[in-house]
Image (cartoon, rainbow, N blue to C red; front, side):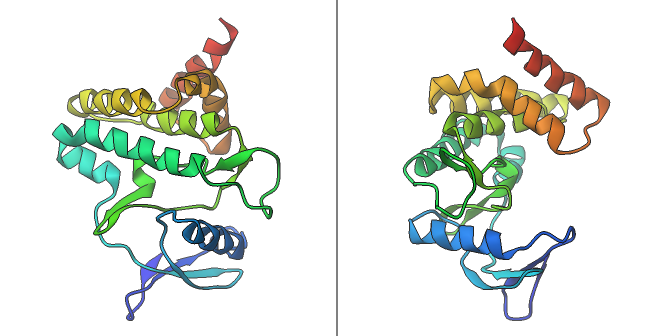
Length: 200
């Protein structure tokens, strides 16, 4: 990705994935009041969108650990916003709208509030799974010892403000994360442990 001379952000595909689907998803969400970058143009291999200035939520947690609880609530609020939006017909599958990768690294704290990025994996399913994926992505992240306490403060606040039944979806969320990309041995072990909880 890069910023053009006119200030717009350009995203290009590296895998051959058609970016027009993501653009359609973002336009749909914007029309339903969800804070996403505005789409200016899209082709199969290039997506031109608004550049939203501001730190990622993950960066803010690292720089200002005393805000972890508040930021956890903000991520929960973003999930509640998605709870209220019907999944568009052009998404495959059944169920409600899922982002599938809604973690602090995909949230920009822009001038007008949090903005959700990266809708490439959006699909339909159980909203509790989307919440569980958010929890898992941060729970297994490699952090320094000093930042681990901040992480759990964030996650405690996050889980206190979402559907408590999302905990039941954590084993399935761990399985999805494990299968999505190659994982290092440490993260693989943590994910397998979370998956194993389903069997006990």
